[in-house]
Image (tube, rainbow, N blue to C red):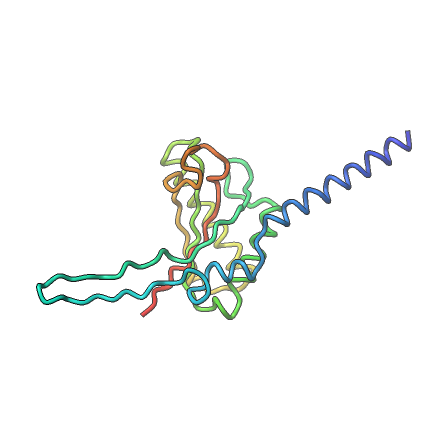
Amino acid sequence: MKTSRTLFGLSAAAWKAFAAGAHAQSIPTEKEIIRALSPRAGGGFAKTRSFKGARGVKVSGAAKAAPSIDLKVSFAFDSAKLDNESLLTLDVLGRALASPVLKGQRIEIVGHTDAKGTAEYNEALSQRRAAAVVSYIVQNFKLDDSLISSKGMGEREPLDKDNPESAANRRVEIRNITQTP
């Protein structure tokens, strides 16, 4: 009897270590987040130029998309309550956003869902979840809440377009929406 408990205890401990390691591998590092969100290091913001030709034709350069990163942030079922696993990810995000490189940047937290509910319900849920992320990082990392906003996209921008009900579509996207002069 004691042997089976010991084996079960070892198995449970091994499983917990494996699960923690697997989750830790999916969390980006602070450097990865900073690189993805930095206008100077990542894709950055494209400077647009325009000129008016001799015949009145105006040509403008296209701006690149805002630097962004998708993060897996878990919530309790059908709610905006952050689960313990997601706090690890949000702690890394908060430290990255508090870094000198991203200080003063305008950040938008965008919630996304799968297509299992109605479009209205999914948009409201994704907005509540994005707001929960903003609340957590502002409160725990003393970030300037005037520089961080939240937005719910619901199911409108699926990551897996071929499978709109996929769990991959449930994510939080972090965008640097700072406008450059």
